[in-house]
Image (cartoon, rainbow, N blue to C red):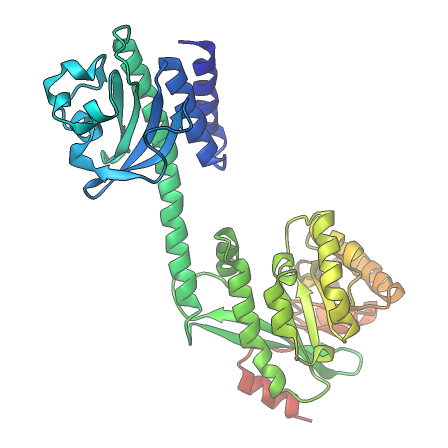
Length: 415
């Protein structure tokens, strides 16, 4: 084995075990090139069997004008590949022109095919995905059993990558189907949790939250996380916001509505289009994200929200106190509202450390002309402590659970 092929195989094996998110196309292309050049063949390809046809998925050749190219297909029965898989041809032919079965195939004379090596790409369930093949126009009697064994080793490695990719594609399809189902009418609905002014003891707004009425049974956070992992996060978030903002047409003047969006959704053109024409002075955009956002994204968010804030939109940072990312959001985005995370408000009446951090955030909000909203307030004792610390706004089960729009409207209209 040459050092070039050995290095390629070691990299392939390492990627398969240690880096599931490697570049799939690059891995297959590099492996194909390595084995073809090692065998000194004119053309190498990876094929896929679909119904009764063979499709060339990857092709590697010395000549740019190779006789086959990616995307082409032909009848499976007329191929060397099928006859190697079913045993009518051996995996190694040093000279196809000397084999009676090979001579029945038109390609043997038309290409022509001299030396030919082929190994099935077999998945773990026994299904044949296709083949890994190399061939040359000339015969090569130096090829031997070690060469076909090496081709099979590479084929087995590629099978692992291909199977992982197929599993990812099936998982993606399943998620897309679930997300599509979740966004059908009556499967996704908005509920509204009241936000109260603790000092004046009056209702000032609602946070719009999403509830799902279809399977699988999982939390809203899991739904949105799953959508984001499948690159459908913005689609689902925009749909949720579309449902939520319908409440603005019914809520009394002076009552604001808070909507949630991840940084990726904030910078999407779909959100700007959706907000156009809405009364922005009655909207609060809560930016939610538990992962670190880079400087470029912060700049983009600031640019997108600048004109919206000039038109009255307020920006809030969610989950303050829950981790490093939320504090980065606060420092970079200069929000109008800071949402104190439930992990901070829970048992704050009995925890001096939580009280100290909440008090520091109150002073920070005051110095930056912002306001603090405590989330997850569940007891009168927590509410009293927050009021003493100077936290002006709060929401939680002690003040009102998330409710349907009709109930929210009744609450908003009650003197």
